Length: 103
Image: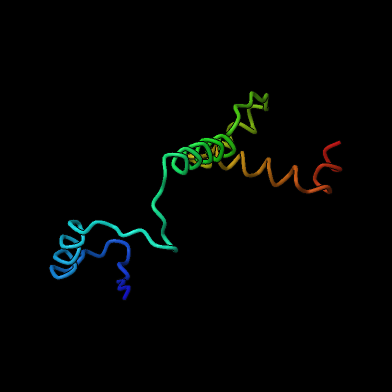
């Protein structure tokens, strides 16, 4: 029988939950059809997949010239303004009407 407890963000586990976790720490996992034991080959495939996923998410560096007024407005957005600019640019490039206006 599987047992689970939902712990919300910021919520501390109860003493009973801590004791149950301590008991589970000493139990060896038992592989079965649903949870087979991982081989070195499996772990290597996971490692390669993780590297590829990380590379896909990595953002590229872009140098862009903007007017002083645009830079002032961007910086006025506060900390994280470069992320906001990145999302704005992505939204604009995905909007054919916006591209048409800028040509």
